[in-house]
Amino acid sequence: MTKLSVNINKVATLRNSRGGNNPDLLQVALDCEKFGAQGITVHPRPDERHIRYQDVFDLQTAIHTEFNIEGNCREKKFVDLVLANKPAQVTLVPDELGQITSNHGWDTIKHQVYLQDMTALFKAEGIRVSIFVDPNPKMVEAAAQTGTDRIELYTEGYAAHFHRDPANAIKPYVEAATIAKSLGLGLNAGHDLDLHNLHYFYQHIPDLLEVSIGHALISDALYLGLEETIKRYRAQLRGKG
Ligand SMILES: CC(=O)[C@@H](O)[C@H](O)COP(=O)(O)O
Ligand SMILES: NCC(=O)COP(=O)(O)O
Image 1 (cartoon, helix red, strand yellow):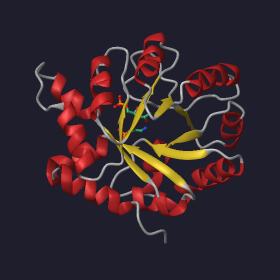
Image 2 (tube, helix red, strand yellow):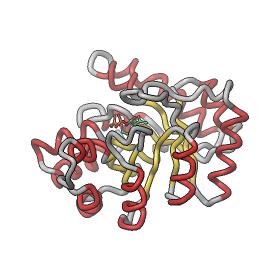
Image 3 (cartoon, rainbow, N blue to C red):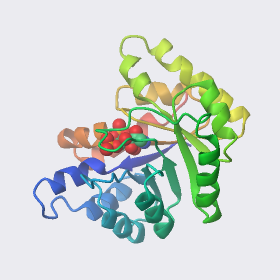
Image 4 (cartoon, helix red, strand yellow):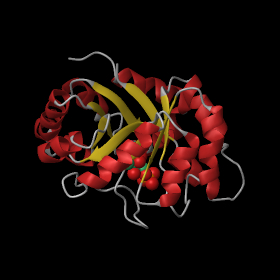
């Protein structure tokens, strides 16, 4: 089964735009779970422009499904936040300061020793580790050397090319997924997945454990409502072709 983890960053963006508590992030997370989400993802950034560090503490005690905290482990504040909350999973993402959104995976060759240390630190606390990587065989192979439990394939490239040429868009991801499987790595995926491109991705990627989806899902909810939206995303993750 491929689990749907809903990324609620964009809900926090909306809340923060007026300074109050509307929409209520915790209630939205609980409703996502009620409507079928199998996990909640947040990606706190150092400027707290959407998810605030306090949100993470509040969510950790409130939600019932898998909590996935994504972020840049080069930030000490992020590392402390994860260790204090002990989520089900931490996803290590190599963001730069001030970056608008994530735009690349780790260079797992260059940063292998560092990633090994970070992975060991989180795993010692019982936190599953996932490393964000591009669909590049060398990066997947080097990720496996870090001791990480999983990798998350950065799917922006797939999403960008899907409409024009789905068969070519999926190719590097199939190769990366096959290598990951052969090396015993669990496989997650995310970034720009949506109702148009998700099912094809799911159908072609063997043993996909989790997708985390935020931007498109929250946008769709404006038209469809959160309950119907989550139902539709879950439906995309059924029935391999
Ligand atoms: C790692 C990843 O692809 C997503 O978490 C994405 O970066 C969301 O972050 P923003 O909501 O800040 O764009
Ligand atoms: N890890 C990817 C994620 O959490 C959500 O990315 P997006 O759907 O907001 O592009």
